[in-house]
Image (cartoon, rainbow, N blue to C red):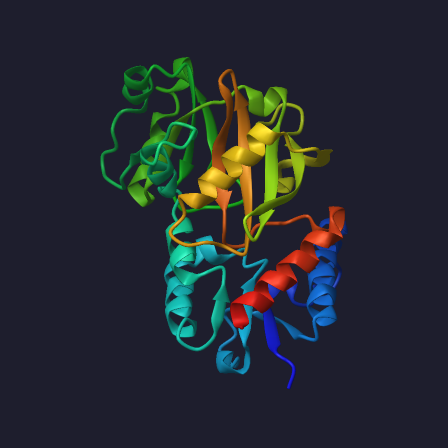
Length: 298
């Protein structure tokens, strides 16, 4: 009998009634991966991770794709992961997913000596440390604040030192609700964009450059960002491989987001749960992922 693989989405991506251009791109991503898995004689189903009717034992493996509500439902998502882990092969490994759910992993990368955007974790508390004092302490003329658990640029803000006092109420609200990260603003984000390297089974497959919209610094599509072709430099590929070596376990797929500095590229984020992998720009990468899944099923 053919092996059965689930591509795990959230409910919004299973059968959108009137997909816009962005949704069509995402559906195309799953179509390309489904075709690559089908070429290896896998049966493929697209499923909602939160659907209580699914028997996860029916699948030989599940590959997490557009589960883009997990950060809004983190406790529920973690409980789901605990339930399915003993029932089927989860790609990427559950231990990696748990680690990557919280952007505090960036501190682990820094501690491992990886070139990474400097990151300070501010734990949930009331009152929060004074934002202007924090920027002064770290010597930041501009900073970015973001939740430790988030996606799509949620509650991500660029703060200038001279405006920090005026942003104090917003900062107090955020830290009262959840752990936050404080990072220096990286000018190259608006000058050159963010480079994303797609890594399949340890090897760089292809890359894109994401450019923020005029007046923006967030590069996500949600905020008007655009995606462009990029030929990965060897220095970028080296950083990507080194960063992934610091993860708890090897992964089948990854996206490593980098930003340029005067001393070379540094890691902005590791996306190891549900990254957009841009298969529509390099369909061979989907075939390589299908091969990686096959190897993990055995």
